[in-house]
Amino acid sequence: MRKTGLRLTFWGVRGSVATPDAGNLGFGGNTPCVEVNRGEDFTLILDAGSGIRLLGNRIMRESGGRAGVIHVLLTHFHWDHIQGLPFFAPIYHAGTTVNFYSTEPVERLRAVLAGQMATPYFPVRLPDIQNFYHYVPCEGLTIDGVRVTPIPLHHSDKVSGYRLDAPEGSIVYGSDHEHGVAEYDDGLIRASRDTDILIYDSHYTPEEYPQRVGWGHSTWLEATRVATASRAKRLILFHHAPERDDEQMKHVVAQAKRHFKEVAAAREGWTISLSARRGA
Ligand SMILES: [Zn+2]
Ligand SMILES: [Zn+2]
Image (cartoon, rainbow, N blue to C red; front, side, top):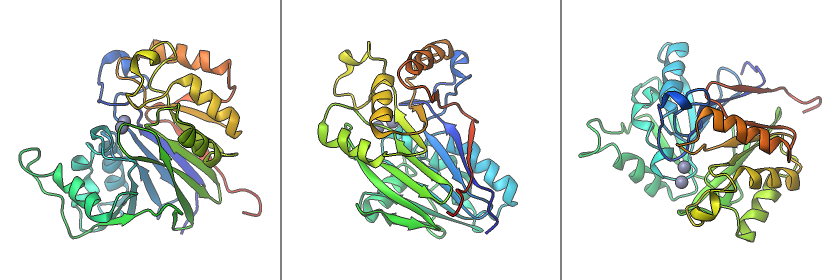
């Protein structure tokens, strides 16, 4: 495999619903999708929100229609995390294998994804031939040299975040998590220990949150607390609320910086590179 280092790219950063509002487009309006790329033979995708459409188009363009093997890790089945899948071109191309993973039983994973591509929701069925389904056990698994460990999160439905450990570094994807239950909060902090990148559900502001307790999301302030407690090197705010426009997003980041210096908000099209550690 040709190694180019690890590149993390945000294709969808918005929570709950796509927001192609003019005032949101600086940070982006697509629902969650994050690409982890380690060279021409390794593409792993976290969630299949509407952002996955453009990623799929790029993959097909660059591969000439033969993209090889693609891995898609799903956190849960809320619509904003799977709704881009019917528009993800690689699932229709025979030259591509798409492996789907979740912490749900394989049959449920297959049924849910096929279920949104059936009448009366969608005109084209999910092809069987080149799409495969996998269960992620609680101890995790390894995909082409990247260790994938699930992290149970607290949400309105069962959710697993993931920690990815690659030779180039580590990434924690902690989207769709509501703070406040010690078992989950402590587990997320433990799983995020010393990670290079922590992506965290920052849907609400601390001022909004008291009116939204039980809705399944957290705040930028909690994000900074988890980053501090876990000694994460870099914090990325994620799952931006649909109503949060670009000006408000800048204000959120400025406030968060007072609590955790290495913080930024996820922005569509933004790529972060991690290079292999010496000796790794
Ligand atoms: Zn969500
Ligand atoms: Zn959700």
